[in-house]
Length: 286
Image (tube, rainbow, N blue to C red; front, side, top):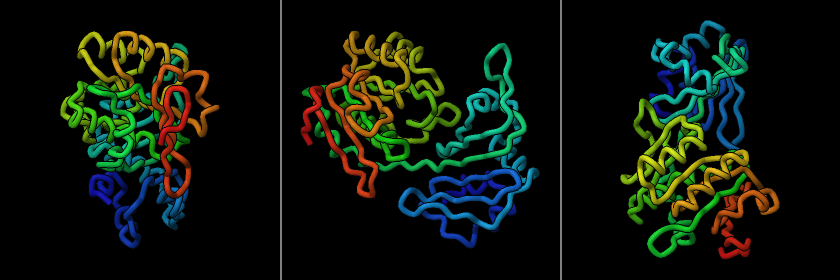
């Protein structure tokens, strides 16, 4: 496991983890006065350690995560996560403080979830063959349950579209999961012709990108409500190709709200992570 991860852990926990095989870890969960749990993914499962994190150690970890400047990360904390060097994402939970009906911050932090960022270069090469469209790409939606790999696939497809197809790509990265920006710079390789709005709501970000960066392809992660879809429709009407992801298991989960796409890539929730590709009429083509 990267030193970038170890260095944000309490010193005592760093030393303790030396007895474990840390290869393949996806998450490290720290909860005040509870045992540390390591998650190795669906296949390997979880490992409940005997190490109990104290309140003081949780605060120590938070100091390392925020480089001893909690105030500088106020906006990140308000959104519930902090992206650290290397693109790794740290989720936090605690007491939610509200002001004027909106979340102001999270105090009394009691849980920290460190999600290790894994970029798989080349995982999108096979899928690219089915979404290429002459000089551009088909409007493409990637569908899968949480944790199966849709963002990982989208990330690599964007790298390929930017580098190999030589298209101008704009990413509206609302949750910092595609490019995993740290201090404005992408931690993941998303291509040399790619521009990024980090931590920006999709609706505003899509329109800003259209006005500012003249993209040929706009990409977003995890389409939510109808507002997201309407913003994508406006981008499509402007002649821009779309690439996005959404939670779902089958065609029925997404059929009604996403007819603006021409290609649908489904990732199955099994050990092989099988990929199925459908056209705009939901006919299977691969």
